[in-house]
Length: 231
Ligand SMILES: [Zn+2]
View 1 (cartoon, rainbow, N blue to C red):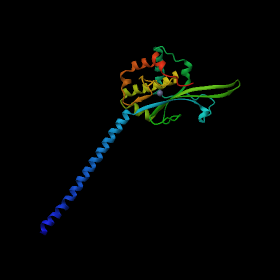
View 2: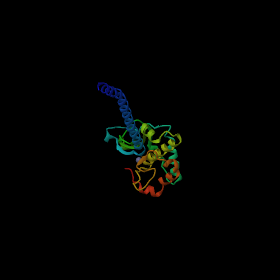
View 3: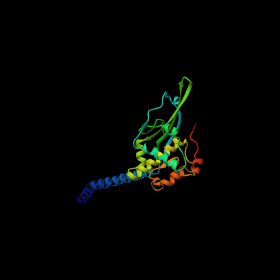
View 4: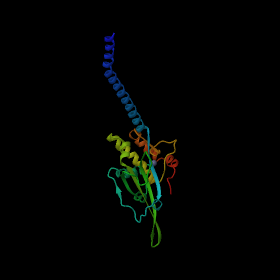
């Protein structure tokens, strides 16, 4: 009687490592499953989460700045060409951007941090600044604009496919240039276009329908439904 009992004990002892291995395999599978589910969710979130931008109109003194002259001109080489293209595309569709409006855009740059802080999901901004400086004849209003593009956030949005990336960057820049040059806000929710308030990651709209999007952007209908951005 003792021997079978002992054998039974030995059996139990022998199966213990196996149970441990099965347990570890099960645990590893579970972890892998959770990790894959999370990665899928993260990817889905990245693709579906809208990205936004900001339009600001700020009296510099109200945010603690004191400026006596216009800021230096600064244009990032990658972003600058879109300015001329935008002005040309507008002109072709009957919308003239006056030269003095164009001159007010002093900076178009990549930044790591926006001057006027945006919330999460914000990747670019059209900033309109103004201040008053004392002169012999009284006070003079100084006003100018800057476009800032968050380096990391915009890179995540436009993706790594080179051909698509430049088109998506152009769409983003046209959006900001429209805010600044036209002094206008966003399309209402029942319209869709470059001036919609959100950018959807993974959208191929600009790649597939660029000319139609630009036609819409400068159409009398869209210009009439997009509200003015500020003073
Ligand atoms: Zn916008």
